[in-house]
Image (cartoon, rainbow, N blue to C red; front, side, top):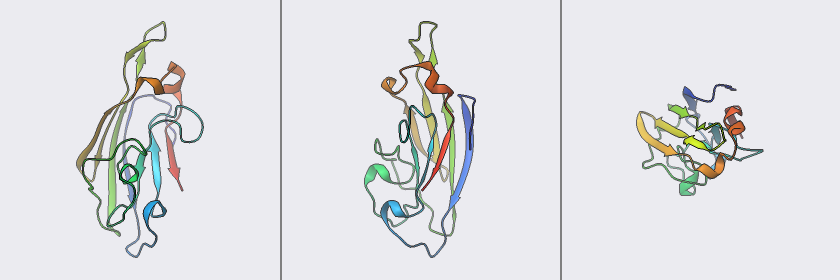
Length: 140
């Protein structure tokens, strides 16, 4: 999925089979990068993972901002049922001199539960070009 508009909303659905195998990060691992801030894993990744009865590190479970902050609850449905992620990304805006006018925000509902209202850190948006990067969907 690629989106060139710096502000967007998306309804994402993922699922894993009833008889899923594996554990931790090896179980249905994907992610959404609302705005890439560089190569590889740079930026914020909303984690997509089967976390139902699946132990992994706290800031790597479903609906976490990967390796930054965990969700307030584990709202996973059991394997064999669809997981829904409803995400709204508001891109940062900049003044004509390049200084930050308003920060970026991501709001996410996971299976109908509000799990994210996050203001992005200024250091990740060092130049207005970063908001023009494509939205990325990662599939491991």
